[in-house]
Length: 437
Image 1 (tube, rainbow, N blue to C red):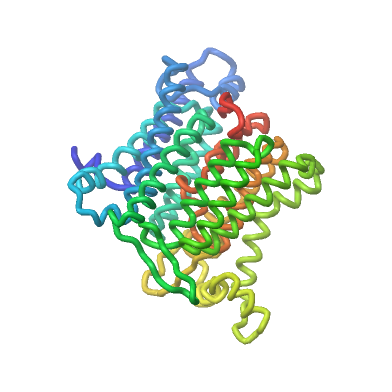
Image 2: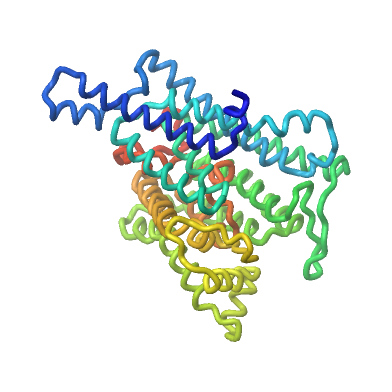
């Protein structure tokens, strides 16, 4: 019995798929048992949203489901932003006790939420099942943890209170980050320091400089999503600018620093020119960003020429990412359902290339297609804050692989509106508390 609770991510994914498969059978049986014409049974089974295994206590289950997701995400962020630091080197007894139990708790909260505390129609559950099945299938082949965990959490974000969850997780993330930074500053925990090109780099208690940078970027993204660009004041921009300077002068994470600067620029632009995104052609161009970045990443990786001066300059600006992408793309073959390449020695930091090589074309096209549709729907809704933050994270994906981490990319919490084929009127945002989907 104990193995059921410690089986790891493979077992957790299987439990959701088994629960959902039984749920599909239950939904079909529920529809067929109705004393109505067959066509109406089909419409009811495909279109009526109910809780699986009985629609009892629906309002209470909705509220409980929202809290299950909130607590699970808060624990995941605490685990990644605090426990996943040099705090582990402190040798404290509480760390040894807590660390192995955290992931069991937050994954089980998500499993219970997805199976028993989320409403589905037959069509929605079938679509969600297909997405999770494909990502689970690819995970068996490549063993990459974060894309499948990200998809699990993004599917679980249906029927939650987005703004409430955002505010709590922002507090947890900020507290975890500052606790680690301060602990390293007063030498309670070790830190990583090097000289790189004549500039000192300090990880401030984390295992690598770019991890420090992306956590700081995440906090900035969450802060802007909480404040909303149309309500930003001078002190908001001052805080973001201070974060950018710290990111540049402390960990010296180029990707995160550039993206915080881009976040400031886009926020200022939309704060003072909110009508900029209203024309359809602007929305269409911006919505093409995921597909454009994906195509350019693959093409530049394939076409890269180390002897060309322009390529060399561009590769230097991207800290060698073009060269690394070229080595991986030309040194590997396409695997439709993903591959491990354990002994290849490839280091692919560009997430567009990384997902293509290790996740394969099926997972890549499904994922970037869903992100593209989400960005279009956000722009159409007028959710400028969320659209800008998603564009910033798409830019970050050119240099780092954190885009699918659910504790990093909070904008993808809004992805269920696409994954479950919900109508455009149910596209959520972080602006209003009542925004559930």
